[in-house]
Length: 356
Image 1 (cartoon, rainbow, N blue to C red):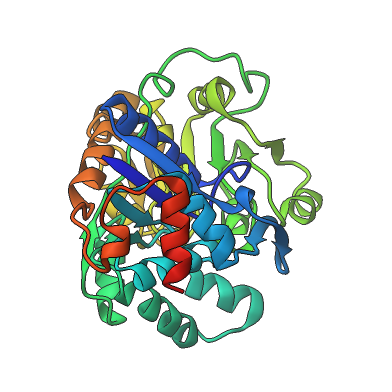
Image 2 (cartoon, rainbow, N blue to C red):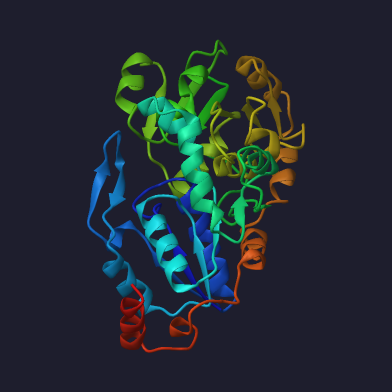
């Protein structure tokens, strides 16, 4: 099939959404599918006012039509609810294309944290956005249940994976000079990640923060004894995981947390709160510990067998993630005849413009 992926999260952003789609695209292309991605880098953009590292694209329908005209899709998936996603939704509704969508980010909580906007207001917008979708793909059952309570009933669970060729147990020389145990956090360094709960925990040893973000400088100043590595990717990141004794995931707002799978694949048990995300990922008590007391969860993880973490991580693969994704796509299109036969790019653009 020819798949059109529409997303506001794309390189050079580094986050779970980008990681997920990069791996899924690779798996789909290995199976012979063709994927075209419409992302913010194709349009003029400006930094998000309260989150400078996230670009907000300026997408006109004319510019969007030109991108669709380059690639005639059999199926369309809208990954995000931002400006690019909204332009895609508008185009699909105008031209009779059925589509699927996904919910990756707890925008209602994030916007309330940064702007004070009530969650009910944001959920109303999200409910309207996804109402036109055939299916809303969610990373866990807990997230699906939450959306169901908000009036979004057509959810389907779509789990995540881990690259076992990159993340696997072994020796590492990183952090060897530091006193143990080595406790690692990896992810965006931002207010919504609740990193301070980890940094203020009273467990003896060395705390390591891998990543960057808007709170990096202020937290680094507050906690000078913490090891701050900045962003790490690929082999460098895997080496850091292997050098650790426990992975700490203090977030209470994530929908999944791919970094937990990466850490477990390298042999690190995960300490986290019993909230959405961790409760669905850490389903095996041998792979981690969930506790309202984060220090207690860390202490418990230090008693666990690393090989059990690796074995549990093997149940998550990007191949399976891509297969689940493909199965949920809506391939049969309906709507106006102007876009249901195979047009050349020039014909397709002209037909689309004529329908505006």
